Image (cartoon, rainbow, N blue to C red; front, side):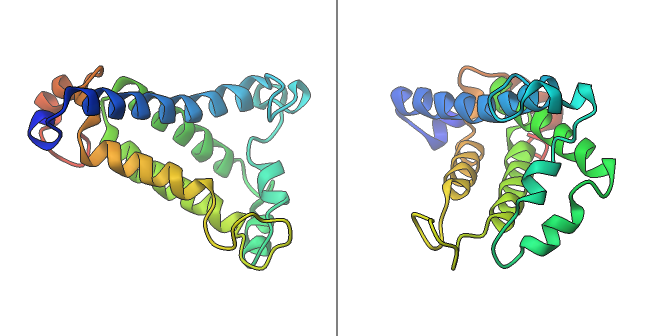
Length: 169
């Protein structure tokens, strides 16, 4: 139970809020890339209009690993499908509180790949030579999974009755 891990109801609420905010970051990215809402994706580049949700990011990858990621840009629709499924799944799991553990694993893997694609070491104009906001997102996802934040203001308790304490929790 989450109350065994986090005794303060205020802290449980704060962790639930963190979980929902992280989920919204992923879910919003999904909708913006799908419909081209004009924030990071203009309408003409929306996935529903034939755009690639991954092309711009991968094509502009920099740093030590930039070439590897640039070679993936536009290479296969498979990357677009996996990326979009990840954004939707991670976002929905974090917001609902069901499947937070697997969402944290997948989300951490996703932001780690994004970190490598924009590896800051040795790049001009970076505010920190090693860490980026990707680290904070990964830490937030790991924290909410480790503290069972899906149990507060979410479906975590109900979901755990179905899947137990497995990695699907």
